Length: 442
Image 1 (cartoon, one colour):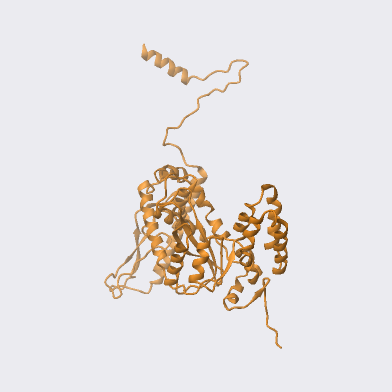
Image 2 (cartoon, one colour; image 1 turned 180 degrees about the vertical axis):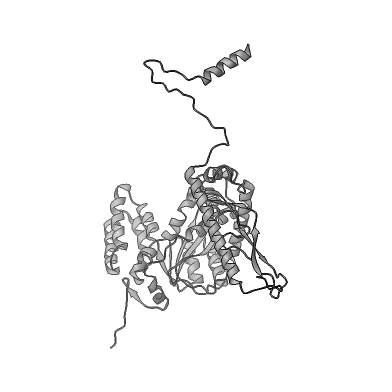
C-alpha cells in the first residue's frame, strides 16, 4: 500500500502541471534548494582568484629565470650548468582578501652543493617559504578585534569574508598571532634612535572605555615629523592618568635610546603631565596647545545657546593671517565673553602664548601643528572597539593591538606640506607670521 502511494506521488512530481484557464501558472513551480556546504563561489571572485593565481605564477617564474640567469656562468665538475630547475614545491593555499589562492613555487637545484662558498639557494621574495596569508589578511585581524569581534568568533567572521575554506585562522592561531605581535612591539620598543631627529611632536593619551589592567590606565602616544616631512611613531606605551611621572619615564626612555635632542615644537592638549615632563627632559622644545581641545574646553563653560557663535569667534583667532590679528581676535573674545563667562575666558587666557606659537613656524605647517589631529584621526577607530568590549583589556592585548593598528595606518600617512622648510627650522632660520625672515645687507 505504501509502495503504491509512493509511486503515485512520484508520478505526480514527474508529470507536468497543466495550466487551467484563468490561471497564469508555470509548468514547474519547484524551487531547487542547495544542501549546506554545496554553495558555489561568486563567479567574479572565481575569475579574480584565477587571475591572481596566474599572475603569481608568472611573477615567480620570472624570479626563477632571473635567479638562473644570474648564475648562468657557473658550472659543476662535469661541465654542466650548476643552477638548474628542479620541478615544483608542493602546492599550498595563501589566504588573501579574495579568499584562498592556490600557488605552486618552482624548485631550483644547485648541482655543486659542496663547491667553495656553499650552496646557492633560491628563495622567492614574493612567496617566502612560510607565507600562509597576505599582509592584507594580517592587517584584517587586529581590525576585526578592534571592531568588536572576539577571538572565538574569528573563524565565523573570516569564513564569511574569505570563504568557507579558511584554514589556519582558528582562535588558537589568533592567540599565537597576538603573541607574535607582542614580541614585535617589544623589539620596536628597544630600537635605537641615535640616528633620528624630529622637528615636531604630537603627544596625547588614549583612554579605553573598558578599563585596562588598572583603573585610569591609558596608552601614551607620540607621533613625530622628521626633517623630510615624514611622520613616524616615536613612542607608544601605557601610563597612569597621563601623569607627569608616566610621561617622564617615556621621554627619558627615548633619550636613553639615542634621541638626545627634542623637537622644535611639541603639540598637545592641556594635560599638565606631558608639559611638565617635556620641560624636564627636552627643555628647549617650544609648546603648542591643541586648538581643538582648547576650543572644546572653553565652550563647555558656556551655555549651548552661545556655543555656535563663540566657536566662530575662537576660529577667528587661530585662522588669523598674522599674530597681530590673532591677538586682536583674542582680546575681542575676552571682552565679549569674559564678564559673564569668566571660567571660559580663564581657560583661554592661561595658554595664550602657547596657543599662538604656530605663528613662528612656516605657514604651510600651520594646519598640521595647530591640533593633535595626526593622533586623533589614527585612534578614532580604536574607540569603536572599546564601546563593544566587555570586561577589561590586558596590557599586552591593548598595546599589541594599538601597535599593529598604528603600523597599518602609518603606510597611509602623507608627508607634511612645505617639507622643504623643515631643514631650515632645524638650522634655526626664524619665521614670523609663517614667512621666513631674510637678512638684508647693510
